[in-house]
Image 1 (cartoon, one colour):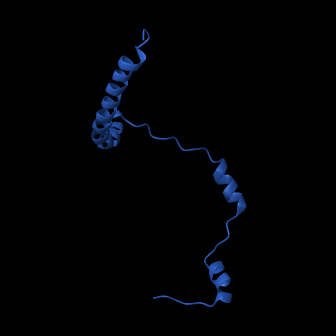
Image 2 (cartoon, rainbow, N blue to C red):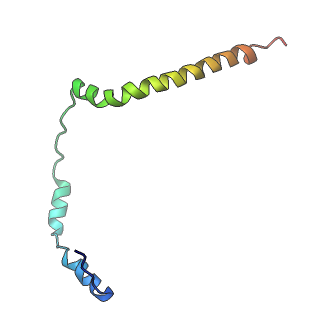
Image 3 (cartoon, rainbow, N blue to C red):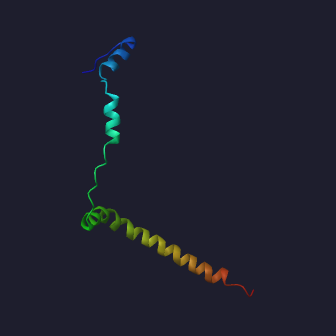
Length: 84
């Protein structure tokens, strides 16, 4: 259910949803000591990375292997022609 309001009533409608926050509470929240992060176990790291790494790793390996072979052939053919 859409409620239509006039253009002149818009600022009042927006202000009605706002609430004031004490600035001292904001500053106190910034000065509060940071919570210690939980250390990640190796199993957690494996579970996070395995989903992306398994698929993308082999794709990138294929692409890098082709590039490495091309660069090796380029070095052998072009860069080793020092006596010509």
